[in-house]
Length: 442
Image: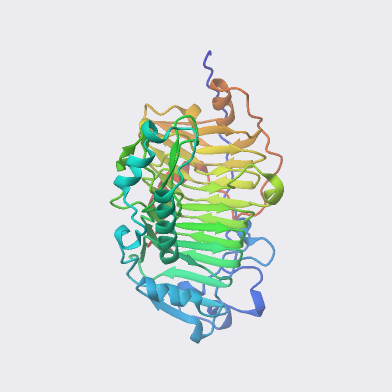
């Protein structure tokens, strides 16, 4: 196909005045310390008592997101171990949980294995040359894998309740190997934490998944399912010393031990993900997990702003159904071999991609920034592309359509209103690379 890369003029947008530092309405009449009494000059408010600013994305809808701001002193916890974190999460709400130092699972994969499960036996039993490719694994060894996975799930998947704030102390708070599950609750804040290596010890081989089969893992760093009013801010997500890129290949497919870093699924709604750093990962952010509209239509409304996507493979994010505002993010994609796509345009998705900055290695094709997963349109304006030393406006839809059929439309059918101002794209790479991630809250 003849290539015709289309470039549009850069849309300059003025920075709007910053809103007040607290949500427009605090639940149950609670007020933050900042609003109850004057503070001396130079005072930095308690991170645990900070709330989502008014209008800061979809999480500001309606009553806004205030987390555990109303927690009495008896509901404030400081944790440094997995047991302490689990105990604090089970305590009454509203609550504030401060993470100090490193929270780790303190277990190995061998501690979870049961029923005679070993990876070596699993590989030998379900090798396509022995088992075939037409039927998913079954029998005693698959039962042992399922039972072993259930033991791991019981230990590492920790439920987060409504009216909760979880925040790291200082710049070195870390949660390693734990899946925080924000499930069917409302009003949660998670900030200033490094999330590392939530690895599945027992991935499932699914030979019927795709043309060649796939390994599928179970855990995200943070899973938001069926929940509303969630703010995930200034966190860092990494696989640590166990990156996806260094996993072995079994049955000719990558042995996938990680799922998402931040996944928002199962009719979740009103979520803001801001100023996070996602690095060195495969399946980064999924918004909507199935093509079935029964539960997700009208939900999955998410704002993704001022995040740094650094050398990640795909799902930045991938979207189904939701009205998703993706603005002022910095995409740093140096290696074509470690990249599939940035924005996944899924079924009935309505992505509005605005004033993002894409820095690509010379071998990375700009046509790969979008991938059509069954969607019809995406609104893109004011985005910038840097390849080498050259910075120029990029029309994401036109560049995609020049190399792909069918074409995507250029109007997602809505205009975002919940935001605190859109920065010019030319300022994004510098501001986001400096200030996204753990330890950077101002």
